[in-house]
Length: 173
Image (cartoon, rainbow, N blue to C red; front, side, top):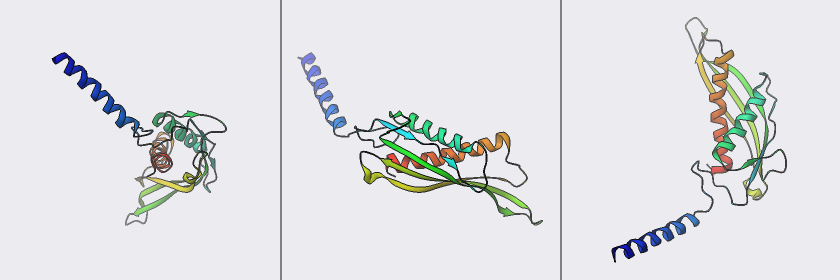
C-alpha cells in the first residue's frame, strides 16, 4: 500500500510540475523573455562614429554583445536574416575631469562611452526600439589610461552597456 501511495505521489508531483512549467512560456534564468518562435539573432558591426576614435573598440564592442547573447540565451548567432537584429554605432568616447585639485589639475577623470542601438524583433515589431546606452569608468587623474588599464576600463564599460541592451531588448527592463 505504501508503495502505491508513493507511486501516486510521484506521478502527481510530476504532473503538477509539468503544468507549472508549461504555463510559464519561454523562461530563462538570465531573465530573458524570448518567444518560442525566436531561434536566431544577428549583431551587425557597430561602427565607431565617435569624435575621438579609439582603434579596435568597434570590433571589441560588437564581439562583447555577441558573446553576452550567446552566453545568456539559447539563440543561434547568424550573419543575416536573424529573428532578432542588433545594429548601431559607437557615438561617444571621451575622457573628462570630474574632480580637481587645488593646483587646478584633475584629481579624477572619467572615461565615457556611448552607443546608439537599434533593435528589431522580426516576430513582434512592437518590441523594436532605438536607444542610446552609455556608461563610464572613473580613474585617478595621475593615471594614464593606456594598454591593459584601458582594456580593463573598456571591459567594465562594455559589460554594463551590453547587459543594459540585453535587459532592454530581452528582459524588458
